[in-house]
Length: 155
Ligand code: RB5
Image 1 (cartoon, helix red, strand yellow):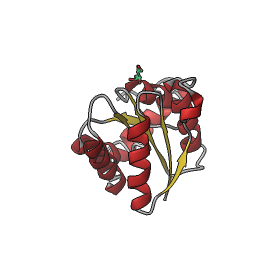
Image 2 (cartoon, rainbow, N blue to C red; image 1 turned 90 degrees about the vertical axis):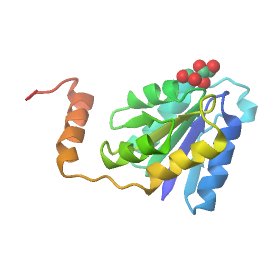
Image 3 (cartoon, helix red, strand yellow; image 1 turned 30 degrees about the horizontal axis):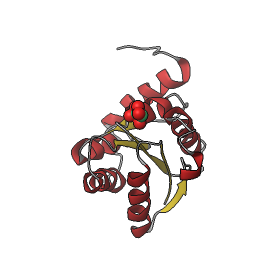
């Protein structure tokens, strides 16, 4: 299991805590920044796009994004074709984001949840499996919108 992780200037401590947590679980982590030496130069769209490209390109198995709210990161990552990024503030939604929506990126807000809750959110997403079945068609529909800009069949 290899995950990419990224944060903006609002969340370096949470990113570091999540890296340690993931590595403690035996997950290989690719840190895409931002790094202290970047001195806040990289805004959340840059990092969201970086992680999104690694995930969509299959270079990693998934991604973790952290910014102030998780919203900007997830919006940016979702603009990369093939990404299904969900921002979550609790583990239930995080688990369902994988089971039902096959989310390949989880985003959290460092100004919204504490570090222990962020770990629980990431764990819930990581431990869950996509259920397939009735959810396949729905996720396929999302990916059709992603690749064509719409849906051929709205029934
Ligand atoms: C930065 O101030 C903040 O806007 C950013 O971290 C994030 O919350 C955006 O969605």
